[in-house]
Image (cartoon, rainbow, N blue to C red; front, side, top):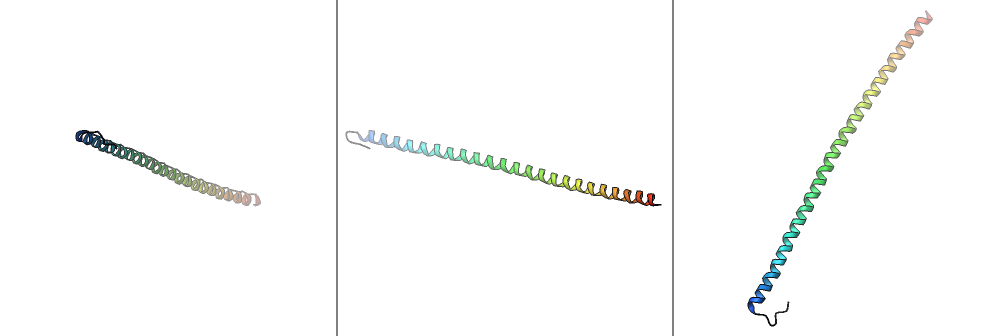
Length: 92
């Protein structure tokens, strides 16, 4: 800064103005950082929620597939028994 030709009060006023500007930028920067952190936290929470939903769906799908496989197996056993019984009756 150039101080030639300025009174002491003007110099102090410029220095205070410069200091105030710097403090204002620091406050704005802190607000921006806080806003960015809040946005990151929100995205992280959303990702965790979606991951939990996906894992629950995958578990439900796996359980359904296991139940269907068991039902198919039981149906196959019942059909085999019926076929053996029919064959035994036909042979008699």
